[in-house]
Length: 417
Image 1 (cartoon, rainbow, N blue to C red):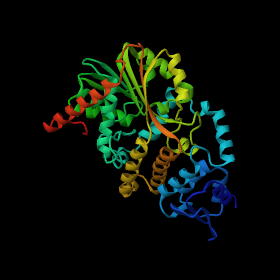
Image 2: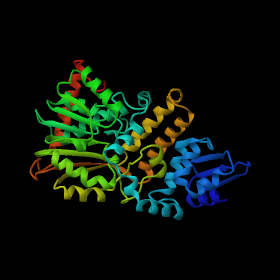
Image 3: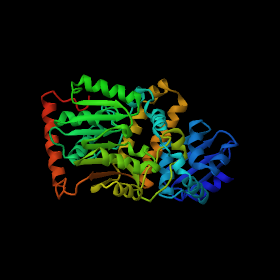
Image 4: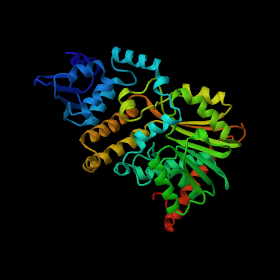
C-alpha cells in the first residue's frame, strides 16, 4: 500500500506496473511510454522502498529483491527521472534530504587518511573492470561531444584538447594535475606541448598504471605521477588542472582546497577546475551513491564554490557549463558495460553487476532530467594573466587538433595508448 501511494504520487507520465510478492498487479502513470514493469520478490521490500526510496530502491535491485521484467534499469531510471525532475519526489524524501544536509559536513569530512580510503573504495577496483566500459585512455570523466555523432573515444580526446586550450600552455610550463587518474590528461599535455607535468593521485592502482604508461611512452623524463595528497605539495606551478577530483573534496574542505590552489599557483599562472555540479542550489549526496559508489563525495552548486574561490584571492576568468555532455558520456559507458556484462560478472559477481548498472543508469538520468551538469572554472591570480577575449581558446584547439593529426599520420601518436 505504501509503495503504491509513493509511486502514484511520483509517476504522472509514462507507465509503471508493479507485480507484488503475492502476484497482485497494479499500474501508475498516464499509460504512455515509456512502459516499465517491476516484480517484487519478497513482501517486505515494498515498505522499505516507500519509506526510504533513495537508498532502498538501489539496494533492492542490487540484492535481486526487485527485478525489472519489462524494460531495463535504464528505462526505470529514465521514467523516474522524468517524473521527479530536480525535486525529491515526495515530501518525506525531501524531509530526509533536509535532515541529511544538517550533518553533511560530517558525512563529507575528508581528512587525508579518510580521503585515501574513500578513493580506494572506488578507484582501486580491479582494473579490468574499467577496461570494459571506458575508452582506451581510461578517461573517467565527462567527454566533450563536438557533434552528435562523435564517438566516445573522439569525445574524450576532444575533452583533453578543450582543457589544454583553456590552460594556454607555454613551453617549459610546470603543470600540476590534481587527481591525475590513470594519467591520460597529463600524458596528453606532455606529448602535445613542451611542458613538465606532475600528477598526484590517492589511488594505488591509478598511480601504478599511470607511472607505467609514462615510462612506456618515453615521457617519464617530463611526466611523473606521485601517490600523494595535493595538500602536501609545495609551490609553485605555472598551470594547475583538476578533472573529476573536486567532487571528492567535500563541502567542508572547499576553502582548504582553493587556498592550496592559490598557494601552489605561480603569480602569472592559470588553473582549470572541471567538476560535476548541480543547477538547483546546495543539496546532499544521494544516500545510495554515498554508501556504495562514492563515500565522502558531494556534487556542489556553483553558489557554494565561488565564495571559497573569492576568499582564496583568485580571479574567475571563465566559466563554461557542459550540460548534456556527461549524459551522453554515461550512455556510452552504460552501453559498453551492458555489452561486456558477462566479463564483469567473471571479475566480480551478479550483485556487483547490478550495482554498477544501477549506478550508470541513475547517473545518466541525473544529467538528463535532474539538474546535474559539469562546470569548468578557469582561475588566475592576476587579472591580466590571460587575453581579454576567448578567441585564444578556439585558436589553441585548432592548433592542437592539427598537431594530433600530424602525430597520428606519422605513427608517433600515443594519445589513446
